[in-house]
Length: 298
Image (cartoon, rainbow, N blue to C red; front, side, top):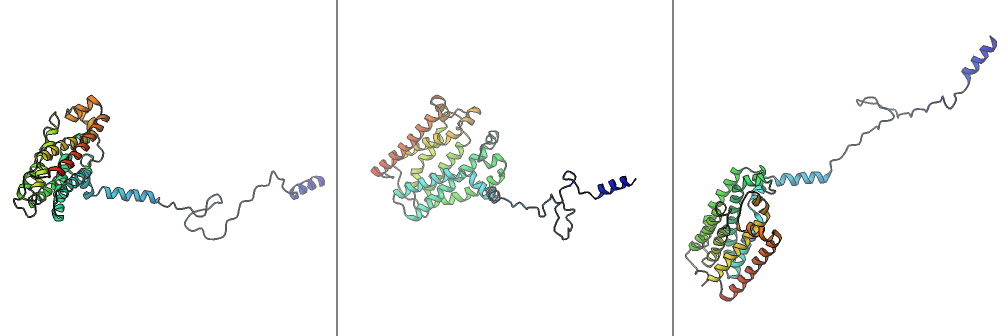
């Protein structure tokens, strides 16, 4: 019995072995826990707050600006083509010796006219563009209401008529006729072999717009040189081919057979791009040479 008591006393007072000893838990600093619940040693005291990435915010701002109504209207107006055409017509007016205020009037008139044509083109092609998931077409994508574009087009017409006539009665009539042909070309003739005709006819009227042009809406000026008119018509054909290139695949799927597509099916789109570019550049050079030799008007 005495031996048993000694063994029990020795076992109770002996130190813990390494295997039995546990790792002491780390002590947390004193302080109130608050409303965050029970804190354990394995959890961080303060959870990091992830900051919103700045590039994403900038992208969201850009996206919101791009979806504004005025920006969408601007994109629908085919701004690149409008600016290039208006700058080209104003440049021709400058070479003809027009005054600064007349150059500004010519540029604004041409710019508004081209915007009207761009809006009308996207309105006419809205269903086709939606079917082909065309990029950069707000009406087809549903981000811009067609009624808004029709309203902008009507306002543009109310603006372009007095602008055109301010260049001169004859000059303004020539420009408005060119616009009417362009609007008609958006609806008819564009699907077949004569797709080039509205482009040639409307561009052929631009020299008359410049040669009869003036300030104040008077009957002024003289008819343009025939050679200049013919070259302007050929320039319109070249622009038509260049403008048709991006939509050749969709036009072919829809069964259109306009002249640029017919040529592309024979020689290929790459060769057509090269030939159209060379054609357009050659006509521009011929216009500069002819204009320098004989002038714009008779």
